[in-house]
Length: 528
Image (cartoon, rainbow, N blue to C red; front, side, top):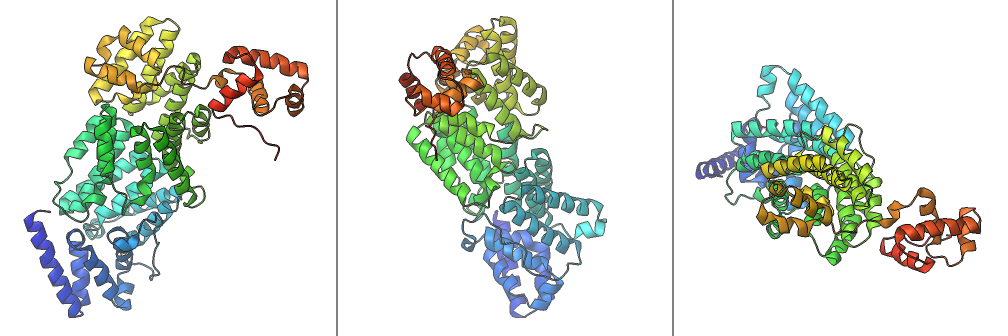
């Protein structure tokens, strides 16, 4: 905040305290209504104490301030703690003004979002937006001070429900209205959130523009909380530029104090920047522990589901459990409309197919993604690279050259090289040799070092479903008769299936197959 803003906030604070001491409640409510943003940025504790001092009859006439006091107490003071659960709407009389209606509705939206009911929260945000759009000009004018933060909450509801387009529109309106009234806290929050949405989608040019619109830091109390998504965006941009050490440093500065329900995005970025298997295992433990503390099913809903699945998949792969890495992606229920989270999950699944030797299916998945990913460069670059690698494996150098050149052009334009590391190292090296201009020379070695290791896939995915069922029964057993009894087939059938399995896995005994299975996370079946 600049010097004029600081002096203005302090002067307003003195006026507010004086009016409270005089019990001039009309003047108190007037100051709060007209200068909410400035007072919040300067002294949030004053808002909490002022609201607590309002007599019941004043709260009854202005129920929005009961909601606002609750909001500030959670967001801006230490009493809010680290819980993701919003305390909900206090008991108030039926609201009369549009501002009161929207304040109470937005409180319910925030409560539903914090308890994992993302669809209900988004429905509330749609209702709130309709109320504003249908209101007359005089009613809308009463919303000027509150609208930036109301719209920010609506945008979060859309974001957490997985509708990033609707979220971006609300965040943009929140930013514009915040700039209009000089509400720097809301301005910073909205700009950071927009930078993060664009960075996750790979729209890195837009992400950088929004980061450039952040107000200059000046040591205000709210800056660390408002800047969390901006730090997420910067971290993602640095990772995309293959600047891993700088990305880790940036992410270490992001604190979830005051915004704990951003934890899935934080864990996702930690997984992107963590190379140590032991620390990766610790991250997995943190994620599963956090999920257990949430309302039932919350970690598997809305935008949280793909973040959590992607994170766990990357970490399982890093600790060497390829089978589990694939399973957590397959467990996610994807939306048919190919929202961003679903696109990224599908991209990872396609990459897994290529790693495991199924280039034809990987190519088919990539083709579908390319058709829907023109607005999401992260997915487009990855899908083009996957199709190029699949084409090169089938010796179609024309398509391989064309698609990898396209991928390189998009990657250079957005400074978005991370999706190229989804390819196995041998495939990426072959494509770089085929199209040397696709990637700047200084990045070539860094890119190859970050690519998927050759042979890192799960060899068991080459098996037929029937063969895989034999493996499942065979892990942990030593007699063919036990395997046959478990699968309700003859011993001769088991022998035939095992010969095929051994050939595909490159082993020559049951014991050798069991060792390979254990290395890829296939646990013995128990009879419990």
